[in-house]
Image (tube, rainbow, N blue to C red; front, side, top):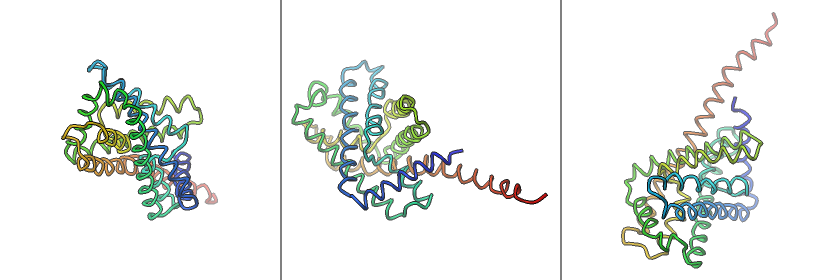
Length: 269
């Protein structure tokens, strides 16, 4: 039932590992690009949300942020939150090892951070737009709320967020139609943003820009690190357990159930 999709995703994980080993510069550039692409989504999200009617703001922000993952998927880049699904499936399929998985995760996370930070620097040099202009009170308030949230809340929000993000990627792999891919990517991303869940790469950009700007005392490097640690762990569980392992168990169970049936057909009557 899910064999084709699992094979595609596990091959993607294997490919990421091979690229990192054979051409680490290419992998790191791809990771840097992904961090910037997600940052683009943050920019448009906070820009439109700054002056939107409060009753519609979260829905509007979720609607426009879906552009970020659409760019990642269609342009091509290495996004950490997607790796939390690709790499466990590659590991479970025997196409890569645990060390390879950890290496991909760590370097992809660092590359995403580099891209997010680079975009934040460029955006600040460019004037900071609405985020550091007349929309700065809303932007800083949102960042401060992320930083001050308790660890268990950040972890739980991180799980749900990447469950949805990886579902978007999973569904996009189940069709070859580009228009359908855009439509399928949109809904889970809109849900996670509108509901206020936590995405570590999106937070990398938001925290970088806030710390570079005239931020209030409630925003600090320590607070940003606190958020990123627990959100990253939650994102790993969301992609690796809720999606990758969940579908793998279904696939393995279906294959096991089909095995005796296949054997019975070979028994002479």
